[in-house]
Length: 120
Image (cartoon, rainbow, N blue to C red; front, side, top):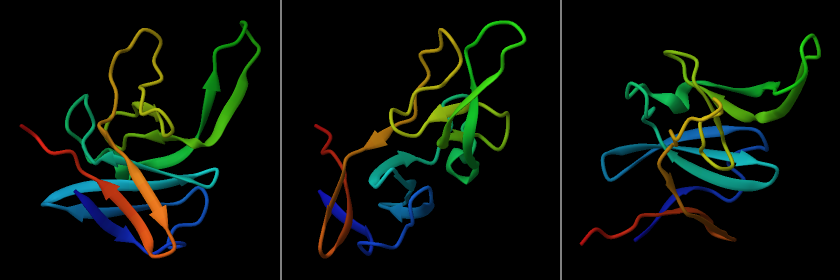
């Protein structure tokens, strides 16, 4: 099932829009010109993760060498600060298997669409 959630250029690069689809909140993000859709539920404590700030983060580096990266690509949960890569949905803590629940996004001249999978 394909659901229209926004007009073609409703979100600027690095921006977000929280939409409701089938009584479910989904965060729609535009990163480097591509759209990503994530369920607005943090896998840690069910916080409204998509309400969090979009920023970068410190990357793994040597002692006293602080490297900042992933600018405008990291979603930080507003409750406990967990950070997620907006392109993959993966939690950024080393060794973590936590991941945001994502949905495919399709775009065309008429709008931005989230594709919901049918459950058997």
